[in-house]
Length: 286
Image 1 (cartoon, helix red, strand yellow):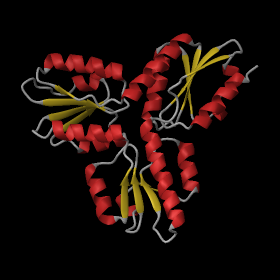
Image 2 (cartoon, rainbow, N blue to C red):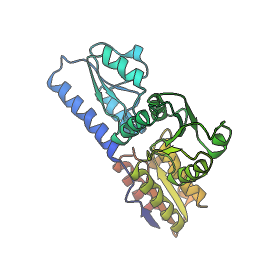
Image 3 (cartoon, rainbow, N blue to C red):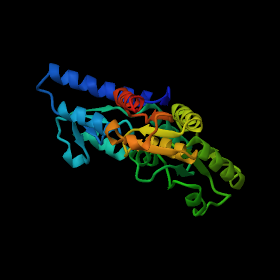
Image 4 (tube, one colour):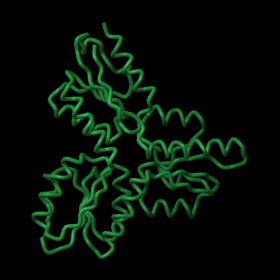
């Protein structure tokens, strides 16, 4: 079997930075046991194995402000949080450290600046995703979230009003470009923010190139990870059978043949050892 592994597979910069901040907090607590709990507000990243590892080290995952104690050392998740939640955490907790991905933070601030005059935000993203909740909270006025061109078409867009178009940082850059061009033809003064992460676009482009050269595609990453789901969707749309798995135990040898060329990629929050395990599993099919 031939395996084509994506060079971009695995941790992105923002995930790596967030986990490094969490590891530093754990080390500092070990040196000062009297310090309060180490907590993250929401899962630090979207990968179940990574979350289980940090839980085993005593890290608590807070899902609401009510769960926080005054002495807690809280890290804001890589996806960011809404502004009001961050403000309340800083008022109520012993220490708060921002582990928001720099690309997400840049998008938050760009939205705040672009909508300061009252323009409506049109955000291409998943309404129930935590990053989107944070991005929308930075809009100075009204905001609409849409996840498809059909959803956008159902909005009452009026050419004479000011609009700002932005996207969740892990959205499909090709689809966003189509939306941008179509909307710009209807709204002459549309302000478009380039909020999709460059690394996301590169990862998606590489996944498509590999899918076009493969018989099957394996995408490794958490099922709650939006960017991983999009990689799987891009591969499936290329017309090949695609398997979105969280680890090698989910694979079935009967679904592959020794003569297959199999593409392998992974989401931005997938640890390298998990990808290695999947690659080794595929290479050992006889």
